[in-house]
Length: 255
Image (cartoon, rainbow, N blue to C red):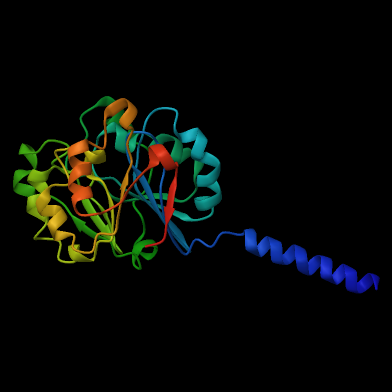
């Protein structure tokens, strides 16, 4: 009787531990970092971080979840452009997580002192063996016009699986890459460009996203008035729901 009860007890503990162990083979999270962007794609072996910025003081509240999720994985960095709200937490990230490396950096060199300090962090480039199975579609402005671009206009645009990340790309640049990213129609999830500014997520882009299912805003309306009401109206006209980190906290989803 005692042995059977003990066996049942261990089986129950095992069942509970398995049920409580998250499976992160293909999960995305848009972190609640206030106004800014930090998006992570979690796979079995790696965490791909698409920007890692936000407002000051926002790293500590998510640190424990970040360590639990990515603390034993390869941490692969993609930065859209050198705006502080897109790279601010690189300092804490590089100190807190092991196996951190660069995969993509912006086309324009950083100018501000803090951005120069971030670029000088002793982080290696990722070995090809870490990234050979990762195949995000990357768009960057052509080399001849880089010197004429603002930081927002220089944003790298990433499409992985069916998740589109435009950085702070304005409509002027959207109209360039709409026709150049061949798989754009596969997009189902969009992280709003420039936090939902009225100068991004234009009508042409939305028309090209024929299968868009959900939009996520990483912004703070109460302080910065993002996402802008004009942007929200364009999305409402297409009956596309908008989730805001300001309302929901960290937003986890499977594409």
